[in-house]
Amino acid sequence: MSDVVICEQDFDVGEQYAQVCALAPRAGAVVFFVGLVRDLYDSQNSDETIEFLELEHYPGMTESLCQEIIDQARQRFPFDRARVIHRVGKIHASEQIVMVVVASRHRDNAFQAAQFIMDYLKTRATFWKKEVGVKGEQWLDRKESDLSASLRWENNGPELE
Amino acid sequence: MIGCVIAGCLMIRVLLFANLRDVAGTNQVELPLDNMTHVRDLLTGLSAHVPLELIEVLSDESAMVSINQKYAGWDAPLVDGAEVGFLPPVSGG
Image 1 (cartoon, rainbow over the protein chains, first blue to last red):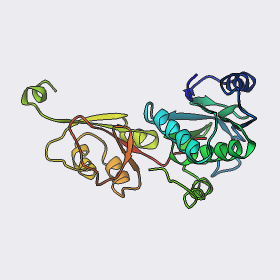
Image 2: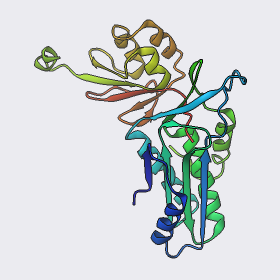
Image 3: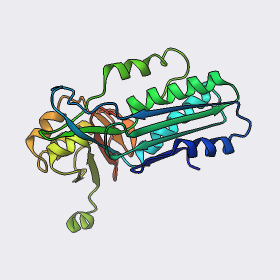
């Protein structure tokens, strides 16, 4: 089972849980984060409806970056197993878009590693989101709040290169 | 292209993503390395192949850059056969 999966298909959290547990038999804690497409309104014109998000990525570089982020997280918060799944292509409201799971001996490392992975994934991994609506489409910018979320780890241990 | 191979000319492959690709109207451009030595020199080489608007968008150097799928800077040196990505701010997750 690969640690990083970038795909168009949806994923089954129950199935992922079973797989991770099987691969981390000594784990005492499993933390999941699942990101959903929250609401589909135009972020600049809130009365306009968005039909779906379109996600693209840089094949090859994205997988390497996600693996690098997992490896960095493991150095800081040792764990038994982690996995990232990120969907690309067309994704509608309420659908699952991303999953991070970490299995470790104790819960602290699982919680922290999952948060670290997610924070860095949002600011470093080469994904781009486009909102598509009846009146047009627009690429989304990285949010300042996401940037600060990843920066909080910088003064507290080894940094990503 | 055949002429280039015969002349032994060195090539760079530029990849464009998201809004940069939309502005360019293409997702990749192959360029002879010529006298370009650093990433920022690519803007000159690109100008013959893409709309002027892309050069304008890139010229403030706010896009991130990758060389052979690793993050790099605008002052990074170019090497033969390099794959250079111009990357708008990422928005995954």
